[in-house]
Length: 152
Image (tube, rainbow, N blue to C red; front, side, top):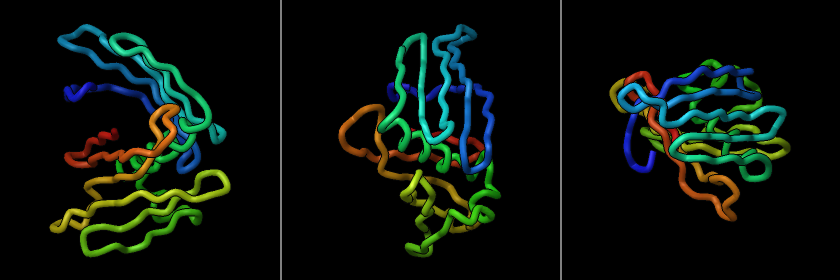
C-alpha cells in the first residue's frame, strides 16, 4: 500500500479458472485502515475499497486486470487449474521462466512465470496489465514465496 508492506486478511471464493470474489481488510495496530472487495465474475472485473484509500471501478480495463490477477494468484489459490484446464498452455522461455497463456474472453493473455532454480516451483508471476481505467498497460508482478501471494 503506497510502497508500505503490511499484512492483509481476506476471504476468497473461486470458481477455478473462471471467476473469483474476495473481501479484504488491512489493519494497522488493530485498527482497520482499509476494507474492500475485488472480483472477476461473468467476465467483468471490479474493485472497491474504503478507508485510507477510496476507490471504485468496474468494466473495460478492470476486466483484463482482474482476470490476470486471478491467474497470477493461481499457483497459491488453485494450482491444479494450471495443468488441468484445457484452455491453459505453457510455453518455455528458458530454464528459469515460462509463459502461461490463459483465456480472457475471446482472446488470450500471457503471464511470465519465474521458476525457483532449486525447487522448480513458481516463485513469481508478472504481466502487462491495465490498472483501473488507464489507457495503456503497465507491468504487474507478484511473488508466491513463503506460501503467501502478493500481486501488484
